Image (tube, rainbow, N blue to C red; front, side, top):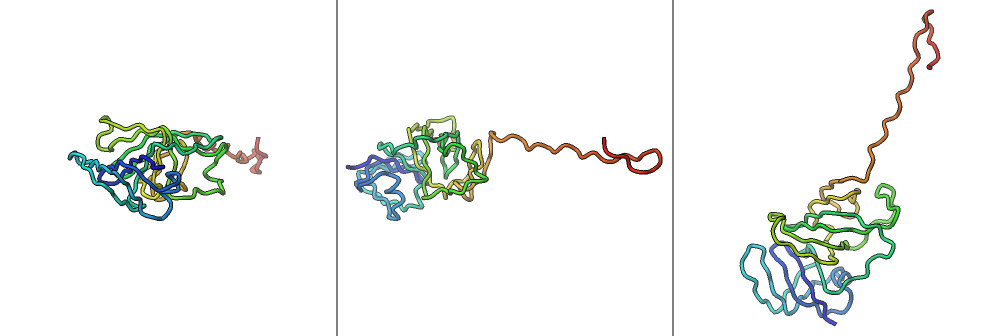
Length: 193
């Protein structure tokens, strides 16, 4: 069954269908170029959209992918607000982690090239107050992300991206000062109080 997709690249958005069987993440991470059929190319430079018949996109050229087929969301996930800058786009969404996830102690590392986001609002970085697209879910290519703003450190998820931690971490407790011995009247050190 064909999947309707929107594939975001550095110069625009390809809208069409992918006839390959499987779920979108599996198709994106197959290692094969993505063939978008019945495609329309929407350049971000403001020029009019044009029909292209078919477009072939390399996996590394895909910044963000959206489909009408909602992949199954994690059942027991904890969702974190996140803002991701990738190419010319800014995505405001939520990203799942497992309950109790501690990025500093996690043994499990993310696998695959694409990270699932839900409730994604996609806009041009140069025109954030302009029009935006809202999608129930999207996959962002974690290796081409420029900047991440979230409530926890996500360096393992987005290697090479600038990280901005927005909250969720308490300031480190400053240790109480150690009592210094005070000199006694006779010159010997008195025990600390």
